[in-house]
Image 1 (spheres, rainbow, N blue to C red):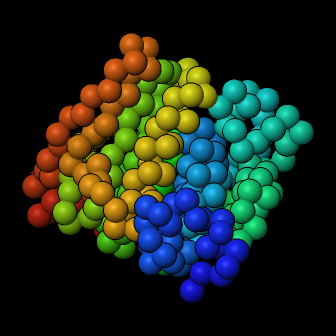
Image 2: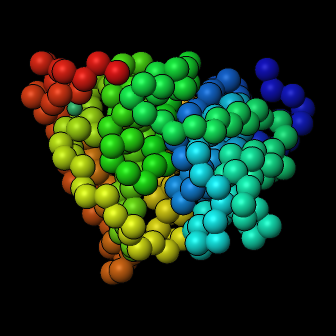
Length: 246
Ligand SMILES: [Zn+2]
């Protein structure tokens, strides 16, 4: 049940989701992999929308070079763990929700345990190897993966529902090479908003999800495109002869 305070706090979105939808958000637990460029806007907007439990995982320390885009962190946080900085900011934004933080690197050996009983995974990572781990974990647990990725003024997002839609390995069988890529803060801001919007819609059962569609943002020319994607029957993660068992 929602308290009087919650009914007030979320009044303007209860007009969209109804009290039942807001209660669903309150009961939900989302796993946010990364408290950086994408993790910042995603966690801020999910926190203020009243998602009951947010679990953030990150291993890094706030550095000066992060601050052009990682809006959870400020100048005085330099040298602090990103998880500690994130916990402080998100709790200040909304003390009515639970923020859990874990300081670790996600890999194939710990992802199942880390994700626990979360209702969905937000991919706020900066590399494909970890994204594949998240993808396989989402499939194993039969929970959605809200994918987002950025580079420079370009970004992409999609929503993966295991068993129903194309997964990340169907769409991107090979990881792009690892690199230090250029980025301006508005790009993760924009893509993070798409991911947060998808998660809120999924949890409240609102609208149509970005499934079997890859949303592409070209900020250089202010152009939006959508590519239809299909499940690959030969996919090692979700296909008929799957080999990934994370
Ligand atoms: Zn697949």
